[in-house]
Length: 176
Image (cartoon, rainbow, N blue to C red; front, side):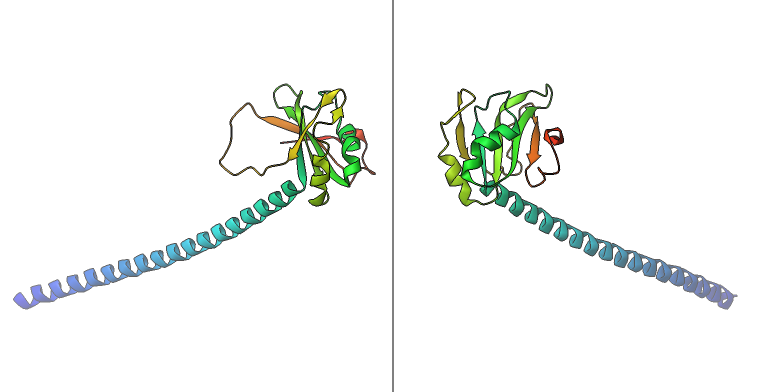
C-alpha cells in the first residue's frame, strides 16, 4: 500500500514539475518578447532623436539666414516688406506674425534670405523708415526647446517667394 501511495506521489510530483517547466518556458518566451519589444522601442527612440536633431539643425540654418523686423506698420503686407529688403538680396520668405485670437498683426515680421551672408546687409536697414515707422532690424535668434516666454500665442501670415510666380497675394497662408 505504501508503494502505491509513493507511486501516486511520484506521478503527482512529475505532473507538478511538468506544469512548472511549462510555466517557466512560457515566462522565458514572454521575457524574450519583452526584450525584443524594448529593443524596437530603443531603435524607434534613436530614430526620433536623429530626426529631431536634423530638424533643429534645419531650423538653425533657416534662422542663420533670417532677420527679425520690429515696429512694422500694422497695415504692411509681406510684399511691401519684401520690397523694402529687396536691395539686400534674394528673399525666400516674409512672415508677418498675427495675434491668434484677434487675427490682427502684432507689429513684427521675419524675413528669410537665401544666404546667411545677406543678413549682414539687411542689418544696415536697422532704424530705416518704413511706412512712417522706424524699423528695428536684428538677426533672428533660434528658440531653444522648452524655453518659452508664455503669452497668448500667435499665428503668422507668410508668403513663400520661391513660388510667387504661381501664386498671387491671395496665396498668403496662415502658419502656426
